Image 1 (cartoon, one colour):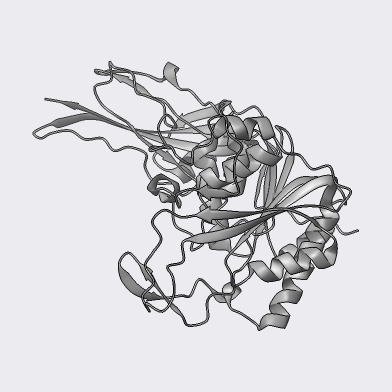
Image 2 (spheres, rainbow, N blue to C red):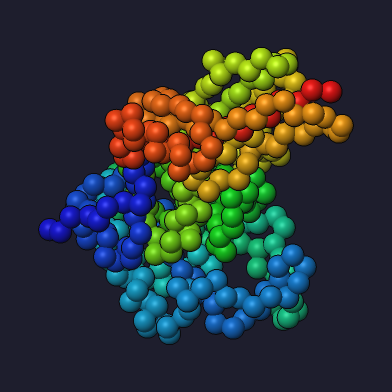
Length: 387
């Protein structure tokens, strides 16, 4: 059997890997019976010149060439092919979740029956605020269907029934889920046309997997499955064809893998307060009905802070905060400092004041390090003003 290509992202500590490529080419390279849970959001075959409503405007439905229909027969053969490849890598008691609209989900369900999957549930995911139907000739599309299936009829699939009942206030959870689309905080690093909300993946992973289980997403898109797996202490593999979508996934993952807390007090700056918590908190909470799901993600600044430093995660993430001062002010000191975070121990293995990233990397190498020693580079920009 051929070996897997080099991943575009590999985090050995948290067992997260992302590959660029076609899942039909990559899945055969994975070991048989090796995956505990699969979530798949395959192409819906919607991008065929139709229209929809976005932000109150009529827009063309074109998510990309990957979403174009090739005809019912070809579309169904594609679904059979990737489902068969997923079935091979599932463990005997593993299960599979597939989301879709009416354009694809009936083909998926039929293909599952043809391949011998055991159908467990069809979940109706209700979207509280769907876009209106502009033609006024159909009911407003307010749901997606998610099929949950076990590998075969002999499978003893995982279902964390008590946890689901607890989340549902002591009542059996039904197969109708009302979960909002991705919140603004989930799209701060970019948008994906079919991005799924973290709350949806949290419920799926909590319902049918355990900590340490291996989760696979063959159409990883914006990386929601890997991000949720990391937060819930699962291991995860993902792949996608698009370099742009993989870059978006990396930005989202990196923003969660590294958190930085800086303390600035008057004119004395202490870097002893740097904190790099890269293990996710134990927080198996269903956020589907939480008003502000991003509350508590970022660390609080100490009450004594008189200013804020801009922190830039150099994996294309945007600034987390910007220094804001009222004029007139006189700047007395400016400093750029770069912190190299180790790939294995996740601590600061090297820090240096430098004029640019290239200068910092040259100094990093000059001290006997190789580029592969670091997983992240964090740049801090300090500006001190006097009134």
